[in-house]
Image 1: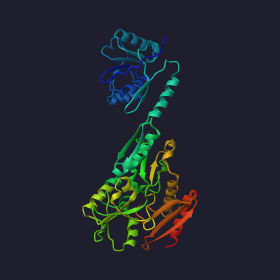
Image 2: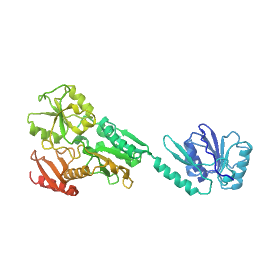
Image 3: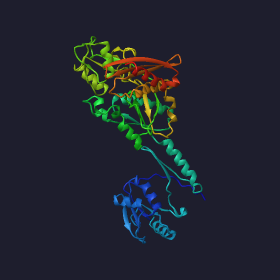
Image 4: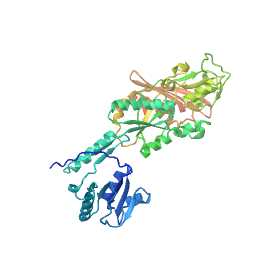
Length: 440
């Protein structure tokens, strides 16, 4: 006898389904049905805790009492799931007499239909069923398919630049894992919402990552993409930085109002970074500053409206936005040392999970540079409120790190440089930080 069943996908929306029995088996059946929109009635003298919660919340109807013949009419499907096999068989006989398809939990030979192992995504529903001889095979196959079909959800800030940067990771994943769905989910962070004060006045760089961190911890996302320069120097152990992208242009740039070729130094420079301010002041002692917040597009709009004579921005952001034509002047990394991590993207995930599919996206040279720069800033206990800068690059097989340390007490800064093996990146950052702190 052929025990295989032909798979038929039918609509359960609004259909009335009766489940006779209120134990754990009945609960599993009901839970698998509810996502498909039926009207479920459970007939049983008692309910398991799960079913009771569903009844109290109004998601199912509880018909309290023992099964009595004559109560199946009008139902689209019937499930017999009590411990007493004789009761299940009685339910089965009545259902068949009324031509109602029935599933009998205690005897698959009596079943008109089986409950398949379900594999669901937002767009697909797969059902797997065997001939009853190897339940483990069905279970393991379903688990493997769930893992393969589970979307990789990439968390990002919702600004245009953040989305463009996150899409670099999304595009890589879609190419590397064509069989896996990849979804970009965006959110507005606290740092994006508060735009009338400097970051050091409202809590620092952590304001750009709190919401993304929460989504990772809650399981709503699988990884987050950040501009490394916006990342706090300390990250939670359970949400490690997995790796770093190839570095885009790390330099800072001068941007003039659209159509202008001459810098009007009588107007303030739009800048909220003290790191940029102290270095630009060294180059142009006459300049004045006014805080500017918001994303790059918002800042450019304020500049073009005449609120500022110029902006200092990161070349990387403008280039990723396709706005490199707005750059009026590049500052070399010797003239203006960038923020630690500028131009590098950091990918963050959950500890203990397998992210080996990202290995090809990460760049080892960027990782050495990132670790050296962040070690330098961390050693100086620097955050966004401190004018501290660091830039590392690999030259002829060696890591060259340049740093800036500002003394609040002396209102002045000192710069310095160190070279060593890339593998010693964190030690080099720490050593240079200690050296510069001792010079001022």
